[in-house]
Length: 319
Picture 1 (tube, rainbow, N blue to C red):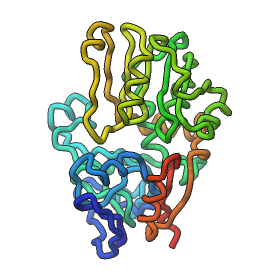
Picture 2 (cartoon, one colour; picture 1 turned 120 degrees about the vertical axis):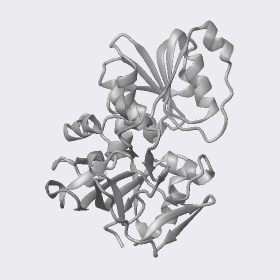
Picture 3 (cartoon, rainbow, N blue to C red; picture 1 turned 90 degrees about the horizontal axis):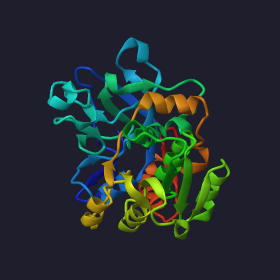
Picture 4 (tube, rainbow, N blue to C red; picture 1 turned 180 degrees about the vertical axis):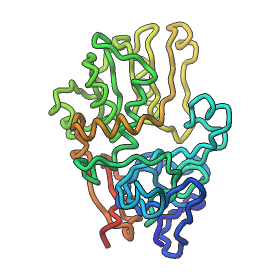
């Protein structure tokens, strides 16, 4: 089968990869669509040592697995947990000590014709959700994780820093809480997507210091973190939503003096994300920048790395 293979920070299109064989409790999924995200780009830059097929945002059709899932469109949670470590026994499988992670840690990913995942990780896609839209389930679930970690009330002043793919999803999900929301970024055309939904937006110089109860950094860079930090009132909460390729310097003393709560946030609830997509409470279509067939995957990656580009999708039905 075909797949985008990463090794020693070099990405190549391979056509000689064996079709994976599902292990006990797993399903074989034929990939229909997969999205390139910032984590994929960071892995290529060396954020984490990984060799294999990249990709973790996908929609596919089950070809081998339980009868009730055969020929069904599915999305899949990316952490494959062992089920018996202390985190699994506490109901925290995303922190399983023995986990593999689709396209990230010791498990081949979705930028290929086929992938395997545990059956328990799979979620059927509602009929009224298109395949393109369903590809956003994983990042939308990650955006929703914030609200499982932090109580967001209507009278809270909340800042989202970053107008990229993740920032757009975080903003739309936070807007559903009716909080006092401001989203800042550097790209007026991206911010216009949110402004069109009634969300207050501005450029980064619109941020007032110590004016927010909660801030969310969706930039993955030091400057974005600094903006999110200085925006917080004492006893505020800073949510770090992006992976960082390098080390991050911060003023630890100010965190202590202002009693700032710092929270890392990543994977979230797939069922809730699919419900939002089915109910059309978030709009992901404006985030789709381009489609490429898998055979043009290297070109797709180059496009995804261009400044200002939103979501690039790999369409396995195209040749």
